[in-house]
Length: 140
Image (cartoon, rainbow, N blue to C red):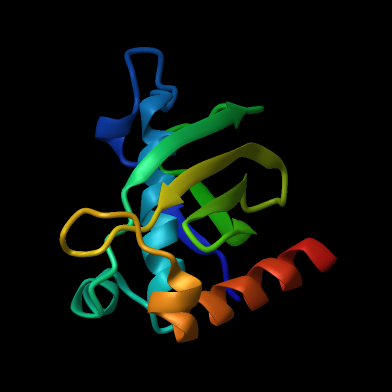
């Protein structure tokens, strides 16, 4: 799957001309939304199917800073998949392939009533597809 491309905006930089660290987390969300759309499970569909997936935690490690107008390519993958929780992994690189940052976001699944949902029972189609993507990502 093609990585998500984000071009650093001027407003995302600080007085030193370097991207503020908070933006890497936002880019991870942009990349996750793009990833889910590409596999046919965008947030609108998930919500229509009664799946709510809040973020439980986020980690990001920045190796090299970025600057205004620089392209960042973000590869998103399913790092862990369980019946109630999952994790996405993110790898960010520049146009030369230099590693910029990596991250993880942790999510759970809730039904419309806010009660934890076991996807393998409630939404087996989504669960099996995400589990297969996780196994594929962990084979590489």
